[in-house]
Amino acid sequence: MGELHDLSALEQGVLVRGGEVSPRELVTHYLERAHRVDDDPGTTVGAFVTLTDELALGRAAALEESARAVDPDAPRSPLWGVPTAIKDLNLTAGVRTTFGSPVYADFVPEVSDGVVLALEAAGMVSLGKTATPEFGSPCYTEPEGRPAAVTPWDRSRMAGGSSGGAAAAVAAGLVPVAQGSDGGGSIRIPASCCGLFGLKPTRGRISGFPMYGDPVGLATAGSLARTVRDAAAMLDELAGRRAGDPFWAPPPVGTFLAACDRDPGHLRVARFVEPVIADVAVDEACLAAVVETSRLLEDLGHEVVDVEVPLPREAVAEFETCWSVLTALSPVEPEQEHLLRPLTRWLSERGRRVSGPEFGAAIGAVRRFAAEALTALAPYDAVLTPTLAAPPLAVGAIRDDDDPQGDFEAQKRFTPWTSAWNVTGMPAASLPLGWTSAGLPVGVMLAARPAEEELLLSLCAQLEAARPWRERTPPGW
Image (cartoon, rainbow, N blue to C red; front, side):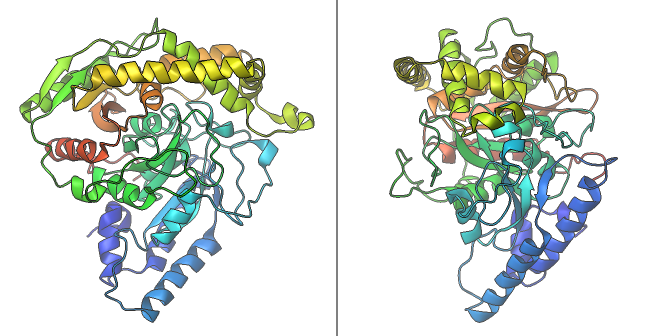
């Protein structure tokens, strides 16, 4: 069967349930790989901030003991016993959680958030915390005092952000599937840079318990994986509402994993390649990937229709206002602000200058723009765009501590489509269907109507079956 890391997460789950591989064997295999790759400055992909060897091995042993103590035929999650990793923005009880910032270098939460609890309930085993930039704000992952998260396809280039560590871990074979989060593209951006499938679910699909820290409703957890089915299986475990959730999505008809095996039928797919943001140069490889995906969709029996950009340019300024206020909400004592990176300080200062009525007006404007976009796109089953304006850039190409405003503008030019679906709340995914002549991955993005992840996953799985990408592995695999 080759090496264990050659298998998908679901294939590993089958072996565990059949007794052919134990959770401890899987955890040991992946911990060895993680240390061998990420501990060596010459091979690191900057995936992990913290590896929790003892906790992971103890958790795996406890799973094995519990399996012996109950009916071995009792139903279990398809991912029971499979290793994963948790983004360093998520609270993990007893495990250091830094939020990518020196301000929280020694912070150890007393509770775990809903995402972590859901993965634990599914019987998955976290190997540790994956790297993220400070407070998850930038679209690249270059944490303070740590190696940058890089794409294993070219270790001089960024893994993207803010789930860059999670994407680097999956793409380098350090875990089979990982959790990320996405407030403006932070799952789909690193998925594109690392040659992965990355899924941002619909607003309210996954609970924000217990912090509920996003009053705008832009951010959600999601999954990064080498296959559509693995990402869908993780979504099955993460999805679900809690009693205190401010908004939620209706439950799916079946499982998200089962949706991957359905024929999506004949679909109308809207397409636009013009960036939502003005004055953006788009790399030819990104445009070519959309053209090729359009042909593939048509070959599969779907109709592709060119449409106008559904969000006006004015929406960008309102999104920026909300983004800066959300950054300013990160709790930092005044005497510690000097520890923050220049971009975080600049965004926080900008956010603090926004008055309460101005923030309320921006939220209202964002929701009106979203309503107009949703109405314009309602006749279509899916929407196709590039994921990014360029293939993965060199590490440091965007970051500019001397000019944080320029840094922010460069981020916008690199990601001129992704935040649109955070504004509308639509589910969206990046698929690794494009490649440059130099062998760098290029994602294309598909979105669907709110709460229609099942249809989106069915379409994505159909595309994966038509143009498989799983066997394409990076150097050092």
